[in-house]
Structures are given as C-alpha cells and as structure tokens.
Amino acid sequence: MHTVHSAIQHNSDASLSCLNSKGGVLLVKVWKNFGSVIRTASPPDWATATVASMVGIVALGDSLLDTERSWAWWLSEAMALPLRNLARSGSQAPDVIAEQLPQLAGYSYELACLSLGTNDVIQGAWSTPHFEDDLSQILGALQDCATKVVTHTVSLDLNQLPGAGGPEMRFRVEQLNAILKATSSREVLIASGTGLRGWRYMWADKMHPTPLGQATLADRASELLELSTVPSTLHAAEQPSRGQHVRALAVQRVRHFAARPFVRG
Image 1 (cartoon, rainbow, N blue to C red):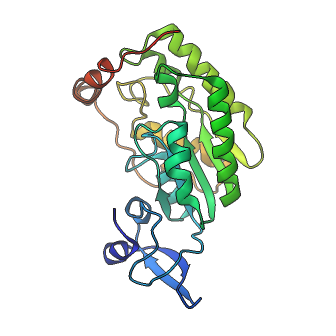
Image 2 (cartoon, one colour):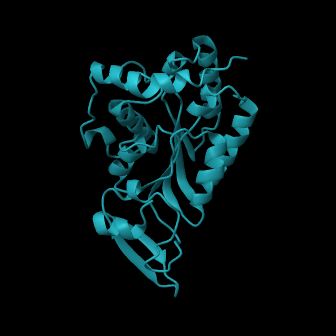
Image 3 (tube, rainbow, N blue to C red):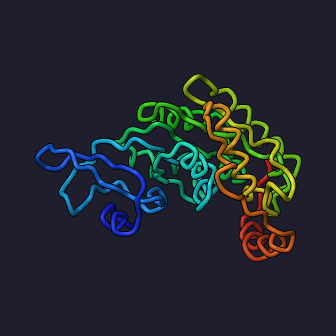
C-alpha cells in the first residue's frame, strides 16, 4: 500500500484537497498515476490530516477494473481527473460491500465506475434476489458520494468460459445483464458490454476485455456522460496477438477455472 506521501514523491498532474488537524486546507500536487498509487483510505501520515474530499473518479468492483489501463482509467484521462482505484480481482458483490464501500467514507467524486457481476455468476451460488439487494446497496452508496455512476453489462462471450458450462452460464449472464439494465437512471448510467465479443475485444478466457475492449467500454461510457473527448483518441490501445491470447489462456486461466468447476442447478 502506497501512501499519499509516496505518491507525491513520484507522481503529478492532479489536486487533492484535504483538511489538516487545524482545519487548514492543504493542496497537494500528485502526478498522472495518482489513482493506481492511492489504493488506501488512510489519511496522509505526513500531515496528521483527515481527508475531507477528493473530486475525481473512483473505481470499484472486480478484475475488469483492477488493471492498469481499465475503462475507468481511460475515462480519467478523457476527463482530466485523478482516479482512485479500489477494485480488487475476484471480488463479488458482498466483497465490494464489505471491503470497498467502507473506503468511500469522507470522499466525494465527480464519477464512480463500477464493474460487478462476473464473479457472482461464475460461482455456483448465484442468486438473483441476493445480487439485486447487494447491487442496490452498492449503487446507493455510490450515489451518495458521486455525481454520476457508470457500470456496464457483461459480455455474452462469458458463456464460453473454460469449465463454465455454456447454456446455463448464458442464462445467468442474461439474468445479470437484465438486473444491471434495470438500474439505469439519470444518475446511474449503463454502458453496453454485451456485444464485446471476439479476440480483438475479449481475452481468450472470455471474461476480461483486451486493451481495445477496455477502450471501447470507455468510449461507450463517455457517450452516456456526453464527454467532449473520446477516450480512445488519447492513446493507442495495444492489440494483443493471437499467440498472446493462447499463452494467456494456457498459463493464467485454464488451471484456475479447472480447479473451480461450475456448479449447475
């Protein structure tokens, strides 16, 4: 865990405002990788301060956001705002509630990005009522601290997940996407990830978007947010080769999911 102090030593390009112990406002310059560095809710130990607010972007959820150039990162580049990334690989809805939501206390954001549901549907204990309740709690907490919330539906390619069992998994993904779409409102925006399919947009594990897939999700979210800058125009999205897909599947995914077989029924 890096602290704000270490971030200041190595980064720049954003502002963090916080109150020191005497109530004075401290303006701290932090560099470009602010969000990937600040992965803790702890106040800066060098200033004995309690953080009052941080106007920027926060990311919560699973491995689709717990990566260096996630779609939330692309949005932060387009909006020229710092990104605070609380997402953790493998997280399900109860994990977000227990481990990530508490870290929002005392902060306010322009935008909250959420990636959720993939790990919930690939586990055997999928329950639509439980997920709906958890999602409602998560979105409520995000709306309390952010002006806008963006999340996305899940790729239908997930039914091809190794060891997952196709038809039943597709049914679960369709249930998940219907729940996500039903939360759409003026404050909660739902980008479409359903059509992200094929090797250009999804890694061979059928779960994680490629760099181009992440940039595409960001572009779709930016349309909903009516941003003047299209995220994917800011940087090149590196496109993995087919060989990289094969190696990623063989090395990183097959053994993992073979050890956790899909439970039907």
